[in-house]
Structure formats: C-alpha cells, structure tokens
Image (cartoon, rainbow, N blue to C red; front, side):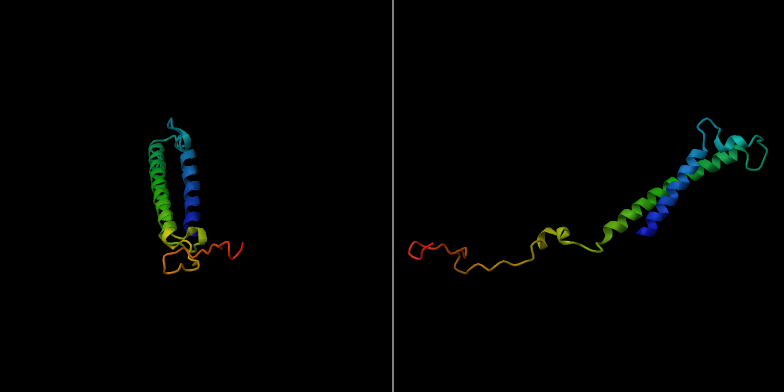
Length: 113
C-alpha cells in the first residue's frame, strides 16, 4: 500500500512537470527547437509531451483504482467500532429466565425497598 502511494506521488510530480513544459499556444519546451528539419523538432517534441501527458494521466488513474481496491480488499486490523452490525456487542448479558419474564426483580412492599 505504501509502495503504491509513493508511485502515485512520483507520477503526479512527473505529470505536473510535463504539463508545465507545455504551452497552450505552441510554445513551451517545443518553442526552443526552431528548425522543423531537426530530429526531435517542434512537432515531435509537442507530440512527445502530449503522449507523455496522456500516458501519465492514464497511469495515475489506474494506480488510484488499484490503491482503492487494495485498501478495500480486506481489513488488516479492525477495532471495536469497525465490527459488522451482526457481530456488534459480543459481550453477553445475563440470560433471561425461561419463564418469559425479564429477569428483573422488583421488591415488593413486604420485602422492603
């Protein structure tokens, strides 16, 4: 569980860097490459950043779903407040008598209060 959380944080950081490297007007990191004939030119850099953004966003979504599935798969430790409703109150009270009474004895006037 901790490993998945660390991977999620790393992917979030990388995604932020890739998004910040882009410029919505075509500038950003791609603007530094002026020659369209260069290997890794403007178009290729913009395509790489866009594919990287989509890949990291997809990976983040999958990791969050996996993290939620692992978290809900089984309780590692439950405390007394997390017990299911059917099992709540496992302490047993004194049994009630078989004659149908409640088992509570109310003293009469003869016995005194």
